[in-house]
Amino acid sequence: MKRTRTIKTIKIDADKCTGCRACEVICAAYHAEPKYSIVNPARSRIQVFRCETADIYVPIRAGKYTEVECIGRNVIVINGKEYGECSFCRQACPSRDLFHEPDSKLPLECDMCGEPMPEGGPMCVQWCETEALTYEEKEIEEEVEEEEEETEVVEVL
Image (tube, rainbow, N blue to C red; front, side, top):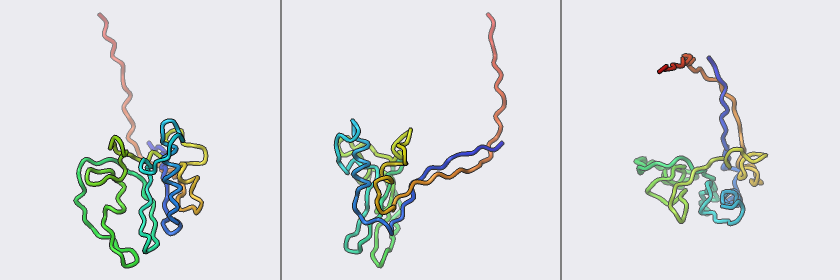
């Protein structure tokens, strides 16, 4: 049997990012309790990695929490400048403060503004004036095994 599943994602085009950080501001405000009551970009589920000398800005969305420190130590070269692998990592992990709530240190994860999602898509996408962030939905069909019909057993005493 086939079923259709919707994959929701925020596509990032780093070439369009100007480093304005509007995505960080609206994310932090939207997730504040109550909504829009405080703006602290450290509480944002999206952070803009920047290298101002090379004029490079890359928005990174918070991913799942991992309890172990990454063992990957690859180097990424952009325009001749070397960056550590952690620079572009989405994980909240014990080895760095990025994507942790500043007061409680609880990990943060991008939830695309929750369910139901705001009309028009995630707030960071709506506030991105350069369209560096775009929301996409893709339908995919996948095979699933048919589940056997469950029979109800009734015990009579």
